[in-house]
Image (cartoon, rainbow, N blue to C red):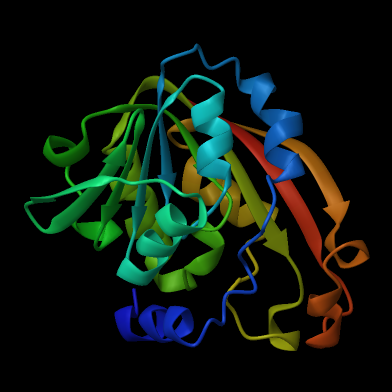
Length: 218
């Protein structure tokens, strides 16, 4: 992961990926995972996503990891929350009741740091990574999950030559290659993203499909 790139994006407020409202895909499809209340939900590369609060309101124990200290500080400030902050190994951990955000490099996380998770919400992690980093991402993720854990994964499929990432294009066959040897993979929806994400059309895309997957760890 290019730390300098992401730090610069946050410092320059180049965060078009950030949404100011809850993600409707999360709200619509998360119930299909049947995750029990009080389960531990992991949100990798969480930024300052308001979806953390939606998951928290659903009664889960929510843990995010984010590289940028500015993103973490903004999350708590924007939502009028006063976290306690402590140092844990390579990470600064900010927490309020039921929610923790680990500030540091996702790839440095260990199960000893965060424990095991029952579920994952990935809206902006896999698509933020260049192809050469995705196997390492999936291997790290798998080391943090309990047996029968479930994931909601959102990915984009578009002509990569038309726009440099991130977000990068992650086609369905790559999702299968990355996950099918250890997860059951189910495509839930496939939607025209350009109908709602007009800024991608402005960046030159002629086609962009947003695909939502349900993954079940075997």
